[in-house]
Length: 120
Image (cartoon, rainbow, N blue to C red; front, top):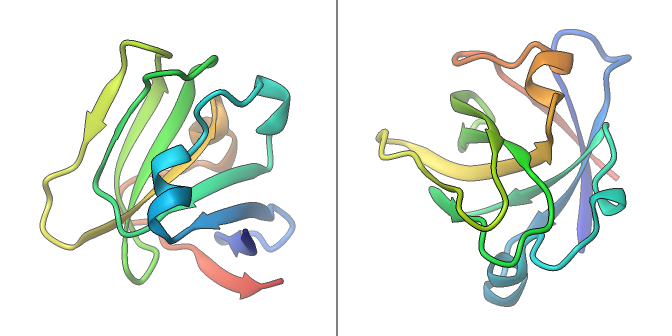
């Protein structure tokens, strides 16, 4: 899987994300992975995508919906395993960024903030 680095205002706060951009990668997502596979500072970007389910998930996550220019359009904290569902029907939603719980607060993520991307 391709890995990219995303930054907000502070280049010291790097977020390294795996990019799931084909059918099988998007289908698998984080299902059946252990919580240790997603430490703070890591994430999974699923694109194109505007909704997620938590079936076969073993841990809660924070979810960030992005426009194609990496602008945050919605944030959802602490989506619970197995029973959680999240969607964003806002026009222009392009991708879902799945992060460890607490990441939204740690990075100060909010609607309107924009990530900058650096390929690795």
